Image 1 (tube, helix red, strand yellow):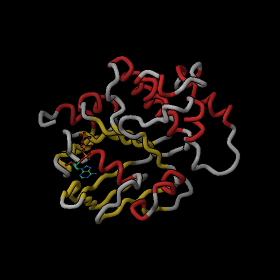
Image 2 (cartoon, rainbow, N blue to C red):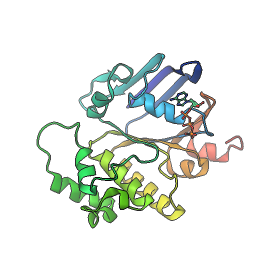
Image 3 (cartoon, rainbow, N blue to C red):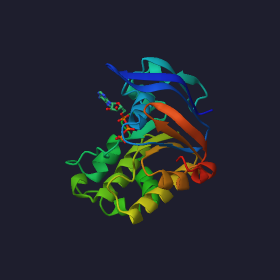
Image 4 (cartoon, rainbow, N blue to C red):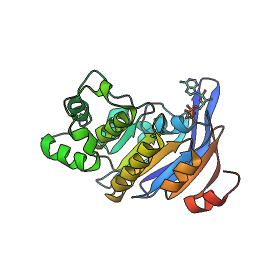
Length: 233
Ligand code: ATP
């Protein structure tokens, strides 16, 4: 197992946002978290990336070295360094820095020499649009391009698990399809993917398995093809 979440509870003061969540991701899997507004999807991603601390439960993760780490006991920067990178909701790129500087910052958690030029060439195979915009201010990119940059920046951390919060938000259907096709390519290179998506149909068309969250609990889970046939979804 790449990631195993057991009996996870998260509270925001009096609000019980996640109630006894169990979730698993196998190596190389693409998994979606779907559910309505306020269901707890972003909260679950934030708990995995260490931005919020759960009140109880366990998040176990097998690092590239084979060690099993308890992410719920680690600070966010150690979690990134162990191979879990998040593309936050609303992208949160550094808009007054260039595309190049944003990409370089994506590698901040890595140690040793980084051959940026070679790595950028690899990234441009996935995101050709970023190539001619390398020196452009990130804030002047279109919404879709900013989403691409946010994903590319996360890849600079060399993750083996990529967490994405609503990559389709505010992006045209055509660009969304392109971004999902790129996510497939990234996944086929061996990166596990957990993505949050409000559009259940879009999510299920693009993942192997999914979990349906409702007011902090998992209501349904299964193969994408089975869930697509389920009228409750
Ligand atoms: P959306 O699709 O609208 O982003 P979501 O499924 O990602 O929704 P969360 O953002 O995880 O839902 O929120 C789950 C619950 O926790 C909601 O009831 C929300 O109001 C609450 N919540 C989220 N963040 C905080 C916070 N910082 N302080 C207090 N309550 C919060």
